[in-house]
Amino acid sequence: MTNRLFDLTGRTALVTGSSRGLGRAMAEGLAAAGARILVNGTDAERVATAVKEMRQAGHEADAAPFDVTSEDAVVKAFAGFDAAGIAVDILVNNAGIQFRKPMVELATADWQRVIDTNLTSAFVIGREAAKRMIARGHGKVINIGSLTSALARATVAPYTVAKGGIKMLTQAMAAEWAEHGIQANAIGPGYMLTDMNQALIENPAFDAWVKGRTPSKRWGKPEELIGAAVFLAAPASDYVNGQIIYVDGGMLAVL
Image (cartoon, rainbow, N blue to C red):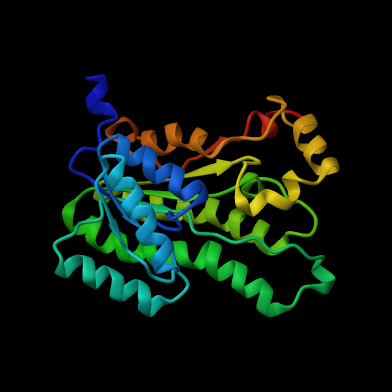
């Protein structure tokens, strides 16, 4: 019974931004639980390398390179899945970027680029996936939020707004799709050891702040998101909907 609750055998998962970083870690975790992975990214060569490495590790993986910020590319990708007989049972909206600048110096184009990548893409891809999931009567959507889904931080306004939007988008998805057998939830990672955070990791003052502010006294590891991802993708979470699970070492629990 326990194995069935977390068994993803026979399921296909599309993980956006999964050629590296948090997306790659979650993709490998879902694959280890039995899922077939559609590896996504804008760099086709990097995607192909990730697919090769995952296959060498014994996982089932295929390349799905497309730009999540292009609605035409997203629609075309799902049409391609349909033509190939690929049903996306699990969608992980992970693709995201960061841009740091005070709001009074922030260009509208930079604001829009972050919103399009981190929030609008999750809506568009979620919409296309849900159309198919509704017809099949089941599906899992996992949106990747952030600590900034709950709290703001200076100099990252567009990221904060996008991730706050992810929290509410997740609830909106649950409100509309739950009756069709779809569970939409989110994961809010804390400060993680990723390429996107490398400059912060190497900044002694910021590194000390993260370790001092987090009850666990350390940065998170990408693989520490796997447990939440597998849970939200598996039958174990069939009555969990519209929630966000923070994987943050306890940061949001304390002042």
